[in-house]
Length: 291
Image (cartoon, rainbow, N blue to C red; front, side, top):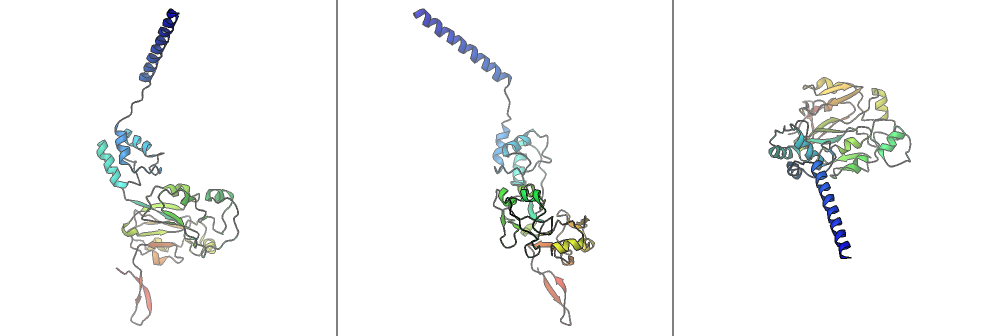
């Protein structure tokens, strides 16, 4: 009886030893080496996991930063230049500074400017509504107002305005992660250069219809008149498909284009209020900036 027990113990011990050896061999054969710098880089990132860098999360982005031969084309919009400088110090690479960005909504078609022509009674989702029909107004390019952009913002930087029916971007909270850009089915959000004092000048319209049609459907639509294009001294404005576009990297905020727009589709924010000039005869003529 004792002999049987002894043989059983020895057999089980031998099998355990063999299994342990096999597991050790397999573990060594298929061992995946992970660069310890990945942990250091991940610790220097904001940890927002917003996907603004183009990767699924901060861990994936950290791995990409470590493995990349250079930091060109890799950027964390939430952490900005400060975070990328910290990453560069860890990895011994050079980070190119970029201008900070902020999201803007390229639609100013509030309820008062864009009258409704029908009533939507479907799923409360811009993506669903955009796939089903052209919208509840005559403009098929404007904001649907169902808040998909607000739902995906992780930084509380977007809220729906109940009076205009449009989302409003809080420039102080926006990190330019790009989530709203991806969520909008009509591509109405744009990441523009962030100026001091949240100064912005941009065309708040994406309507590509011809002037008369666009103006009929929305009182503040761009009608493609090119007046802004003609007065821009920095070649920052281009015309395409009956629509003006202001390049924020070329724009110098001179504001010459703003008073030229007959439909007020060019938005300027963060500037002092313009005051009207008074001529010798007492008549009002033109505008000037208040400093």
